[in-house]
Image (tube, rainbow, N blue to C red; front, side, top):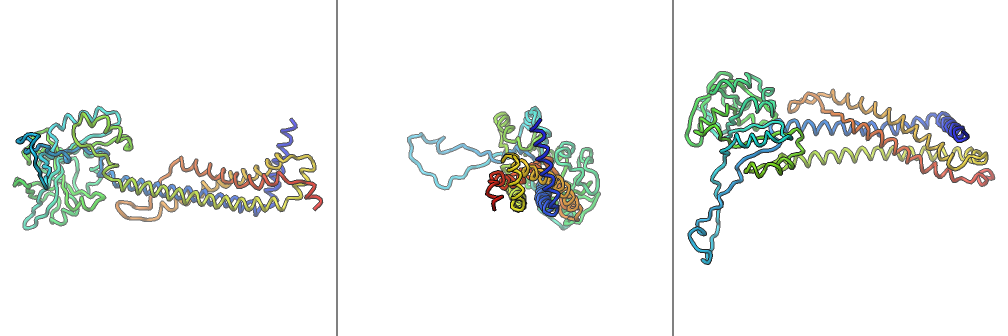
Length: 418
């Protein structure tokens, strides 16, 4: 009972200290408020930038790509003819790549679909062509796609600015062409474009759609046709493809999926992390910079609170001495000033959280019309809110602890004697 009364008195004294010097208290709270709000804003902005970059990248990038591009012919005619005892020297040997395609596409698609981590699978037939319209002749590429699977993986239908993506399912001689390529060829909807393969196969396709992705290089050089039409043009069977693309529910689990399926698949499996190491590095560096700046702001706020608490203790040193002379222990004094620091931390964290969301929301309204964006990107994560509040309160308590510890060790006799 006595402890409860003493704690109540301690809280009352702490409240008196906070309200007697209102300007100092407000400044201390503002220090925490600024630190927490900047932490929220910096991390939300960086999260928005990373999410936007990922959305743009993965709008055309699969989590795992299966192809035959690294397969080489290991046949050595010299060893086949001569005995192992024969001494010979070969200079400038070249490895010959005999095949660049996948012959058992359906089997691989079935293997990948059986993995619980896999969300979508599609196959493509990609090859270089010349696009011809009248006297204009442009080098580019064709992607033979399964329209429904391709749309599920990459949202292709949303990028079509003229015509309909799904028409590729029904119009076997239809082509959806990149916006820049269409402009360079001088074609529009319902015009015909002739394509010529490196093997000399030629066919006219009708432009049934125009697509605009976030990557100009693709829009300038690529067109899409039905995968069946692509196989027919190349003279291949229904199980032929140049690559199989796989998307996961969690794109960070690519290593595990590759380890589980690589042997059964039998072809080269390249993860998005291996293919785009600069994307991973840039995202990590931005996160490190944002965290470092935010923590630095919180530390600066902590030093400001430390100075304010130190000044408060110096101003009230005689009161502290009187309290100790009246029977208050060093633990009570420590409790009084830590209570003040905790209140400052809580109020500063809550107001900082609100201010941080307000600043982020305002920035999210700033026009930024680049790569399909309309405003500057902001993305909130609940973990950032929790971390900001925790860091704000801990920083404040630590900033208040050292002056409070100093106050708890004051000898009242020395202070009262002067």
